Image (cartoon, rainbow, N blue to C red):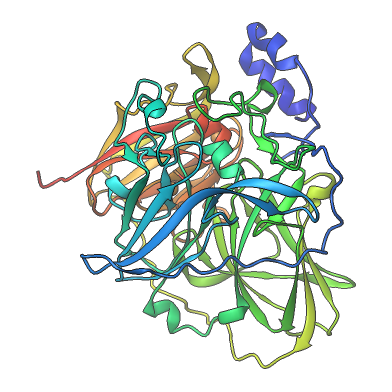
Amino acid sequence: MTGLSRRGFLGLLGAAGAGVALAGCGIGSSPGQTGEQLASALPLPDAFRVPLPVPPVARPVGTDPSGADLYRVTQRVADLEILPGVRTPVLGYDGIYPGPTFDTRRGRPVVVLHRNELPVPTVVHLHGGHTPAESDGWPLDLLLPVGNTAIWASHHGMVGDLAAGERSYRYPTDQRAATLWYHDHRMDFTGPSVYRGLAGFHLVRDDVEDALPLPRGERELPLMICDRAFAADGSFAYPGLDQGMRSVPGVEDDWMEGVLGDVVLVNGAPWPVHEVDAARYRLRLLNASNARRYRLLLQVPGAPDLPLVQVGSDNGLLAAPVTHQVLEIAPGERFDVVVDFGALPIGTEVTMVNPLGTGRTTDVMRFRVVRTAKDDSRVPDRLADVEQLVPAPGATRRTFRFTRGPVGDHRGWTINGTSFDPQQSLADIPLGEIEVWRFVTDVHHPVHVHLDGFQVLRRGIAVPGPYDVGWKDTVDIRPAEIVEVAVRFTDHAGRFVFHCHNLEHEDMAMMATIRTVDSAL
Ligand code: C2O
Ligand code: CU
Ligand code: CU
């Protein structure tokens, strides 16, 4: 934590909390971060040696009775070689990290039958999915470990819809082509579960996207960026209060603002390198970190940085491309960008760097241009129709304040002063109506809403920022900032959540229940 944020922290805590907050002092993080860096306890490899892995695409095992494509995933512990020569136990979808990529098509519903062979319960959430409540991953709808149901029967005295060993999640897939991701969402333990491996890509494609001449095939790369720290025995180091991830939520005081690692992983590999053609590539960037924000640049030795041409946001294609020299990405966000290696001489090394990091987290990965190749891709000036949400003058307005606050008798994070309450809806929203929501922060909070995307109307006193274009489902809100968004839930009446996607904040209660209600009733 920097001197500045430490002071801010103490100021908000008041004198009573000061002794606790000063106990222990981690390695400082840079400005622009909310979180505290954890140092790995083993030697770290050189950057740009390990090849970039691309997660395998999941194959359907058949068709379910309703005609949906049926997939099976087994969640299990596996020992993976993430750092060269080191074994790291992960909680993995199919025992891999990242999990398999679902490559789906609009109009083709998908059912994923998850089997939990892990030692802890899980909840699967499809982030960005337009999913009915029963398959959205309500944080208390636990999928209990196979053959180990008894001890989990009463999770904090609150019980959701429990499933023993296996559960089917149904995804209607009636949404625009987009880069979605799936990850664990268990109440109180999302942070350690995702940190230990439970995350993967879920792509949706459609005809609109297919008709565009964007790079495809080998030249379309999903890139899951996250940071981790490693313990001396090779395991992921996470300062959770309950290392068994059973009952006590939260992390040690020093990491209350968020857990930052000192190793940057892309698709599960430390600072990887990828050999590319001298051609355009489409990069589907995802920040799957618990708390770390990145500022991404593509550096070319002796030449200007390569621009990142954004073609899509969290929830799909933009109306027109937006060119960035620098891209800021907060936890949970996705940016779909095209980069052009075409003009670079063979042998050029293009490094994706992160000036928001400190020390080794200033590097992310490298591309090495190894061959000339034909390239008939391009980025058209018009990409897709994007409906503009225009709130009526009398539209319902709601304000949600994301701040530190007490959670029971300990410190935590709150929305409008309240900690996550599964029983109490903070807002009942009629389906089909456009509302204006105002998010207000103390420190950085990347705010994520389930069920439907939204559009940023205003950031502070100004127009939306450069990273706010298009349909979003996660918006990065800087310290002491106000962001106004237009939201509309189209269908699926039920109970959902919205929350901060800093996973330590989420686990320490910065989440709220909302209800979508059928306005015709
Ligand atoms: Cu990516 Cu509610 O989560
Ligand atoms: Cu989500
Ligand atoms: Cu937060």
